[in-house]
Image 1 (cartoon, rainbow, N blue to C red):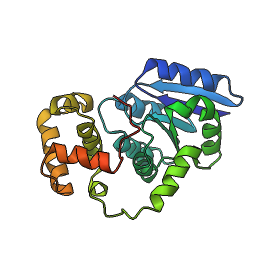
Image 2 (image 1 turned 90 degrees about the horizontal axis):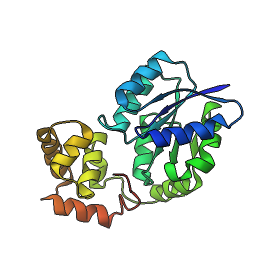
Image 3 (image 1 turned 180 degrees about the vertical axis):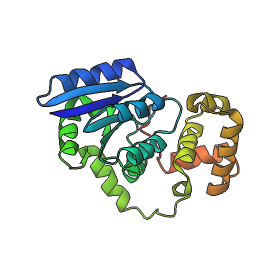
Length: 215
C-alpha cells in the first residue's frame, strides 16, 4: 500500500486529489495539510511514501519548503503539483529534490500514474513538460540574467512581472513590504535592470510566465 500525503492550500483541490487517489488500487491518503507549517508537522508525524506538494501555498516559498522537506525526510518522494507550466519551475523543483512534476490541469488524468511511478523509485514528468524541458536544454541561455536569481527572488520576480504591487507580494508571501523591496532591489541588481518595466519586458521577451495563471 502506497501512503500519500497531500499539501495544498485550497480545500477543493485537496478534496479532488483525495477523490482521485481514494479510487486508485493500492493507494491510501494518510494526511492533508494546507500550508507550509502544517506540511512540515505532517511529514514529521505521519509515515508516508509520497507527498503531493503544491508549490504555491501562502507564506514560505515552495522550493524552499521542498528543500527543507527533503532535508528532514530524504526518503520521502515528492510529487510537485502546481499551476506553473514553465520549465523554469520544473528545473528548480527537481534541483530541490522533487521526484515528479505535474501541472494541476493534468492531475485528473495523470495523478495516479505519477504517484505510482515515483513511489516505485522512478521520476515522473508529463509529456508536455518533458518536451519543454528538452527544448530548454537546447537553448543557449545558461548565463541569462534570471538564472542568477535565488528561488525566493525568482518568485518575487514572477509576481512583479504579473503586475503585483510590493504590498500584494508581501501579503502573499507573509513577509514585510520592506523585505520585498529588498528582494526587488537585489533582483534589479542581479539582472542589471533599471526598473520594474524592464523586468516585465524581459519576462515577456523570454516567455518566462506565459502559461502562469496562478494568482
